[in-house]
Length: 124
Image 1: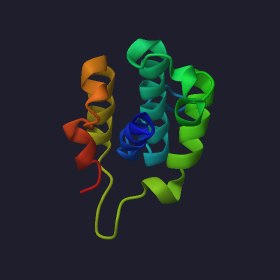
Image 2: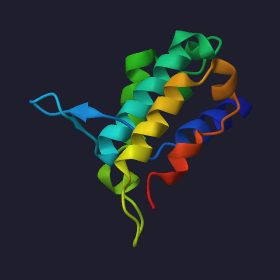
Image 3: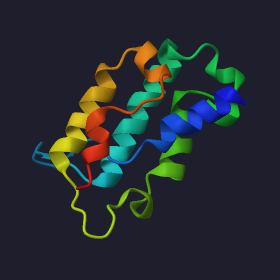
């Protein structure tokens, strides 16, 4: 149960992070794409060794990395779930900074379940 709650906390912190690119190669950031990139980064770390035996808790981490991504993108990355609140504006630079901070996290940092500081500032 503790592991289940910890997973919810990690993914509960998801809000906005990530980058995509348009046909010209220019970066574009939407809250949905940001969330998807954040999920991809976290699932990659989880299935890359940050969590011992993630397959032992498929309800939490999915059956593999792709399943982890699909599961959390569907549950956390819809437009309604990642939109900023009334009176707030989405900050693309903070979203990119948040993703960069997740990418730089060690497994020990990820296990502390504290989202990177920039993630709390993507909506201002």
